[in-house]
Length: 331
Image 1: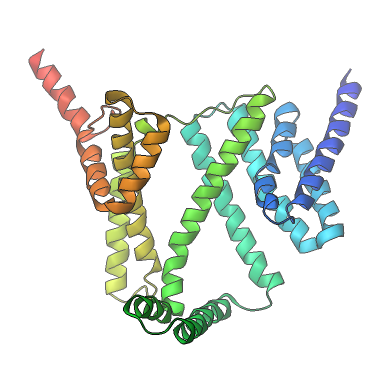
Image 2: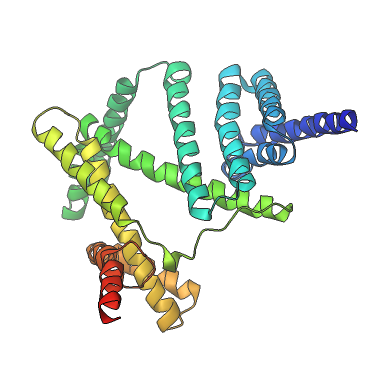
């Protein structure tokens, strides 16, 4: 019986490796390749769920070797490692029955590792130039584009403002923006990995727990306080010249602002959904319209909700603590 199960696992590992290999090959297709890339970790996760870690790793190695033969060894290593990590994390989240939030956080960590590996391989094996050289070339592209635009579009006030903005983009500006852009890319990739993974894995009889409804989302006040303290500490280091690149300061500042905006959006979503019974489509449409017009208002609303818990969904908020104390005094 044990021999039969072993043979079955080998056969399934071979089939899953072939599926993973085909999916990896399809990632080179323009447009659709990006969508397919989020399905690559699924076979690896399924092998881990049905058998064990050893079988999953064997599948990852086989797929990587096959891709290496057809598309280059470096590309094979990159796809195998990044998708292997995400697949194993997905399988772990399902096997250990992690909550939706915990699963999403683990996928953010997995995608962070994947992005760092991709960047390392990009500059060590593919481009043939250093990271700083790449940034300088990118800045030159913006400056050249500004000159060409100035010649083509003329010097009207609207055009002049845009051209001056393009001219102001230098290597320092790009370096400061990179951390924030990377965080946005990582969170987006983690969300898509979670969404695609949940849909397929749940269809196949397993269960990846869902994220709570957006209208009930909140950030732990301790996490918000930690980001504020980190931001103040980084600002202190920048002011003292310990850190010359302001990218980390901008990252923590924008991260804090983004967290407060998300919490403010959740408050508005909760209000529109439960008090005014708006449809999800209208809630999304109105939220996008408002947050692009008055993001500061949502940031302020988010801060208020962190402190007093307007919706009553966060048991750790200051508002919940005060309410609990008042109840005890009344009793």
